[in-house]
Length: 146
Image (cartoon, rainbow, N blue to C red; front, side):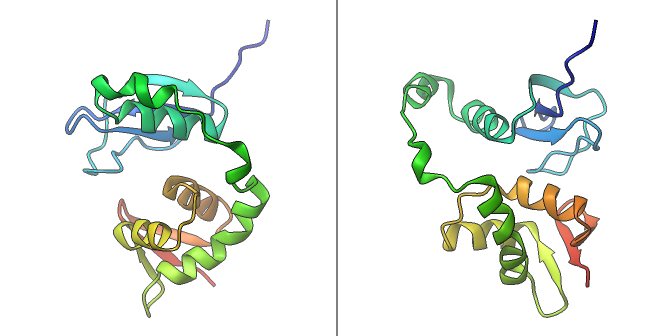
């Protein structure tokens, strides 16, 4: 009998109560406060990044509003395909970095919002690190390579 492995986890920070998603094999540091989760409070699991994004977003909405948001019909044709998103990552990295090639989490988030990219900042970081485009300096700072 084979086990179904979930690549992504939805975790509730034990320090600031923020929900965030992480790959199963990475360290569980909160994307908001940076606190490393020694005993992570796992509230969900998924193999799909879109589902991960949906779960994290939904859990960070106040409980009294969750039902209303979960019933919203989000049009699939508005979203970019994963291939289109991946092709835009070098542009995102370049646009959010400073003259020294450093990327700060706040600048990355601001760039994504300002330029109306629909890709999640965590996905940009995960893909960029796994492709060797950036090197993590701290929880909120990366260095562009190359």
